[in-house]
Length: 488
Image: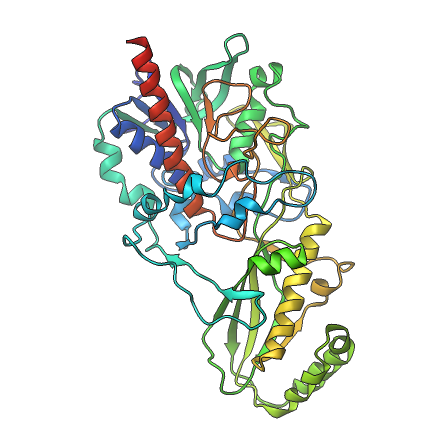
């Protein structure tokens, strides 16, 4: 049943599970754990609809690249699924086998650990059973770019699709306008003993459960952990440690423009880097979309194109292709956009501020930062794409100077794919949660969502985060069943 915590604070004395955050991961976990027979509290800080007083609690400072964090997250029932575009692509085995540069390891588990959960994740977001993640177009020659493969969810709005289930699932209590403002940890037992819940008038209530799950997004998951004085005092988290570090986004780079050769298919082309390219270039993965903007005249652009080629054609090894510029009519002008992998970086992090929000919780600063390895990825993808467009006589690509010249400040935008701040690892030396998403140093505190990602890949995070959520639900159900059997 869904209740408004502002008016009704009739919580049970004790729950098997307390889940903080009712976005895609939280709703998925809540419904599955309750269906397995456990008592579950699903606490959502926002209401049923967008409201300024709830959204305002997402306000944060920024000392790095511009993230637009407050604008790109949504703090109400259903979370960011309320403006999700629906693009779905799962991770691939190489996401789990190729380690990132910089000294931090990749995933501590093999791809097979989540592969079997793909059908369940697809069903959650209304993708037909057995659907193939089919190619969007033909690839490029050379073995560096293959056709991107993805499916589009309707898109699924979790609060709407699962409204009846949230109201009627036995054992599930959903409270909106119910904010978590503290986590109480007992160092002696290693257990989180309770969370402190608050309405918007700062009336507090202590909630006890056997297991706790944070599912509030990459920024807020880290914020909740760092804000807990008892977790800090016990050494479970520290402000200069891995909690909050390794914040990753997908890099939306304006690579440049292109002129499509006359007679070529004007439909958007979507490419994805191959494993061979990643291995040979020692770069990250990337999705590239080339799409026409508008019809243009043949004349007027040739001088600029030739000037650009004079500077770069010889260096890139396709001087022989210069002649084609004068041999076709330009039917359209296009832009090349991307979704490029960012590598984990401890200096890209969420940290606490002294300032408190309206509920008394410490605000955060986001220092979104890139490394030289990220710039290398951008340069490799842009340069190789330009070469292959020319080699295949598809058209001419004019890269922006900051793509191939890493000394020029980068122009980019975020994708609102926040990842990595509670990364999964084999040990606390390299991460925040273990292979089962449990926070290191605790016995009953788990994290769900893309904040656990050890690597971000170049896929939209929704599909894999749902695979991990279903996997976590299975793990917790088995754990609790085993514990109940031992007691009996």
